[in-house]
Image 1 (cartoon, one colour):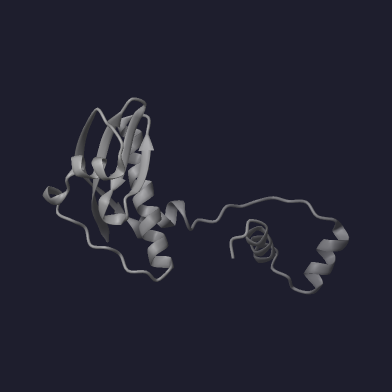
Image 2 (image 1 turned 90 degrees about the vertical axis):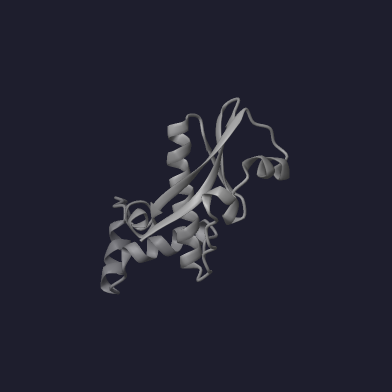
Length: 140
């Protein structure tokens, strides 16, 4: 299912800032307009994906003509050279499959005695590594 949200694109000295007013002023940026659009899709997908994973409700999107970029820039107190509003669209479920949920194969080396002991106890190496990395990164 496609998710569509208006985004304000602000041209600045070193590229573009992108702000989603309906999503607590969620923001990203890019050096070029193409990069800004790509980052906007990634940012939108990540935000909506995390809302879903956390069981939080997804805010409704405003109509495109209800978004006032000049007012948003004034609220956020930043300057810009020019601006426009565009709808950013993403299929969050499809995007997540490719970017957030896919597994990555890692090769590692452990002592043979440790490997034997773990195999004897039917330990899932992938799960143990994931749990240890989450603990190390403080990501429970």
